[in-house]
Image (cartoon, rainbow, N blue to C red; front, side):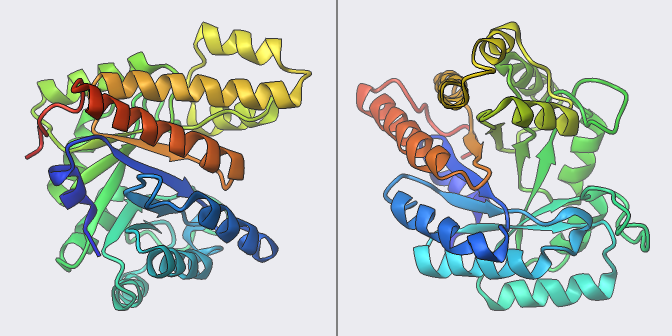
Length: 305
């Protein structure tokens, strides 16, 4: 299987990926059915990210089983999440050995969400500590998160450049951004990274809003700002669930197309296990990428080569 940094360095267009989470066991068949319906390889997907549960333990086994199934059954690289919260060196070593034996070579290393279940150990208090430990094995391609508008737990706004540098020096090979609704936030982040001579590939994280409650949850969890255009859509369709869902996906697609036009390294869709998000948005994004290639407008020569 392919390491994800190799994909970024060799693909001539933006890397296309999406994220899913371990569903309730009764919903696992539905998730696999959605993936089968999508046919990720035919849809131009380069890798699929599988998240961990809060606290780093709840969905640990599910994450691994789903990641293994996806990589083996669909023949596509998987990005296996690992969290530092409540992790110990011995437990981490066991997890890495288990992941390696199934042929998975890519890990997204994050601190994880602090919860009542995550107060026991402090061996990896920050993402950089976990990244460094994983990178020392020299077996995995390690990715990390980046926050265009700043981390929700940090009162400062904007990108934490020192945090990014610490992740890079610890062994990070690529970055995936937190979701954002205003592309200008991402472009400002790109300018900052360039000015600091940080040239890691960065995928733009996009989450289509599917309900008013979903918007409220996302903004609470991530601190992402809502531009005026999106706020107007929320008010317009707040009593029309179907219209809201469609408008949310349309807004996200417009974000994606603009990002592709600006030569972004990758597009990462936070699909939230929603079948219509996968089967509607992913093929449209891939088609847009292919059309740009046909027109000779994009992509430009890979800047990470």
